[in-house]
Image 1 (cartoon, one colour):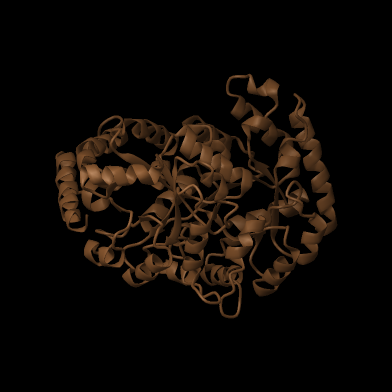
Image 2 (cartoon, rainbow over the protein chains, first blue to last red):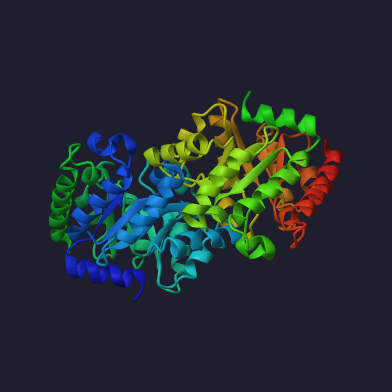
Amino acid sequence: MTFFEKLEDLKTRKNSFLCVGIDPDYERIPAEIRRQDKFLYTFCHSIIKATAPYCIAFKFNFAFFEAFGAAGWETLTRLRRSVPADCLTVADAKRGDIGNSARHYARAILEHLNFDAVTVSPYLGFDAIEPFLNYPQKGLFVLCLTSNPGAREIQDYPGGDQPLFLHIARRVQDVNVHKNCGLVAGATKPDQLRVLCETVPDLPLLMPGVGAQGGSLNAAMQAVPHRNILVPISRSIIYASDGTDFAEAAARAAETVRDQMQAYL
Amino acid sequence: MTFFEKLEDLKTRKNSFLCVGIDPDYERIPAEIRRQDKFLYTFCHSIIKATAPYCIAFKFNFAFFEAFGAAGWETLTRLRRSVPADCLTVADAKRGDIGNSARHYARAILEHLNFDAVTVSPYLGFDAIEPFLNYPQKGLFVLCLTSNPGAREIQDYPGGDQPLFLHIARRVQDVNVHKNCGLVAGATKPDQLRVLCETVPDLPLLMPGVGAQGGSLNAAMQAVPHRNILVPISRSIIYASDGTDFAEAAARAAETVRDQMQAYL
């Protein structure tokens, strides 16, 4: 099964398209946990264990692990191995480099760390993405329409007949011979999201921006009906409580989102 | 002193604008070294020690270290600390993410690993670059015109009156209030390089593509006269020999490049 077939299967079995975002910010990890040895692993692992019944994937934001140096990378390796079999793993690494470097990033993330999917940046063109395409069983989400305000001046760059993000979307569709590609498209831009979905109706979406970033699940779902979609939510789940009950609070928050998702399944 | 002032100072003192690229590819590390414990550190550290007299900076390509997992990150940390004081360090990490994630990448690379400069990707817009800008003493090279063929369809994306890479170059110039910004612009495209230099004559360049990638130092230097420039060369130096004399061979190769650079100083 490809990554996206597994995703559809889990969606059906678990009645969810929630992806919990593991973004461990030192400042926001509960103080009582921070005092412990191995607090980074403890915090993340507790969240994973508590929320796994309500989500179908975990997205690990590499920035937050790299901020802890080599120990962060070691923890990421251990955490990846601790994810239950009924949840997929997405490396939110946003890598993008040429030729041999891209091959090494792909090997690092998809082989060494053994993630199921990865986010990549298209600024260096499609030869930079190719090494990731050559893993037919893994998923690849190409940055297309991101949720931050400043992205507009680049991603909407006008071109001849279409903005850059639509050009990228069409090109991802072209290279998607193994059906292992999707797009990152933020929920904060329903109008562009709608155009995107009309242009490439078959590409799955990783859709950040719901929750803390202000996007509404309902507005986003109006724009993307009947689509293979994965919604990553991080802060409003993993920091639902700043006390020692953080894992239970995360589970309740994840369950609530899962329940809201029923309306769109 | 800013990063670019330090670079100019070293250029004058060492008669060089060579940056040795540390891209340790397992397959190309001499077999006799690979058999040793800690071979990754040994190989890279020997290259650094041998070539330091001829270069003014080392560029560490993160892809190659991440391919070794947590041990690679640990080695990168140790190697960074081993670089002599008369050489600067560039983290070739090509990071690009939004808000809080970007802040964490900046902290990881510029504080935790303490690199002097970093490469970043502009696809997510300038709010994604801002956290890196807020380190006035560090250098920031924004990907602009890269040396790979596939980059053209994105970086030359036409826009109204200028291709995307020129838009990015002008915007980098706009945000360069701390004089800590430069551009990554490949030596393999002398025509675009010339236009770029006419458009933003004051921005320093990190100019890959000379050597193994086919760009000529002479052609590139014709396009970029009198400019603060740093030329990273990796493969033709660090793999100059596949025997146990690899470090001496690297030193000789670096010395030869340094000598060729005299004509342009």
